[in-house]
Length: 157
Image 1 (tube, one colour):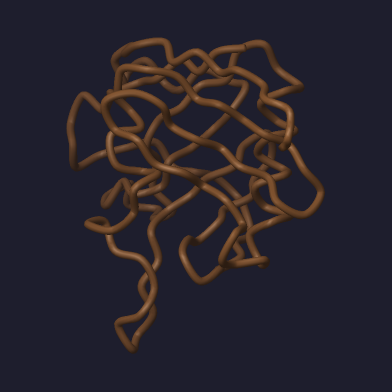
Image 2 (cartoon, rainbow, N blue to C red):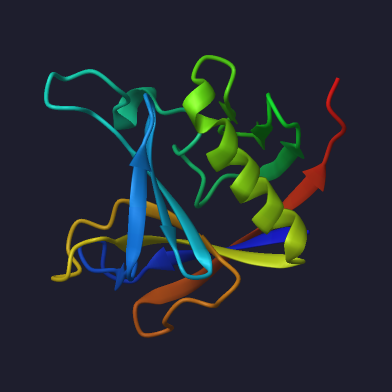
């Protein structure tokens, strides 16, 4: 399995994520659309939640060297970045993310190749902040091809 990553040609303009609904957990906002799952950092109006600075999983995801290690589990799934930008996406501290992480792991295991790119939930296509996982290639007019990130399945301990 592999993740083909795409970079924005213009850092201020991205493809529209599309029709979707979202769920907010303690750490992230999860976006679910047709054939795609997106993750963005979340900070509520009181200032709590994740910020870009403390969101270890999303930082470097588009250009890191290494691999993703996915561990499916009904109650404690994990997606771990191994390489020069390490981070873990898990439900250890926030059970509300368990089903969301499992949906992303299922998508990764259902497709040999997934595409990862930043998209926007705004109609004006500004503020690209959604890390989008999709089995479909993003618009070539907006993105340039980046690097492949291998995905390896791991059994739960």
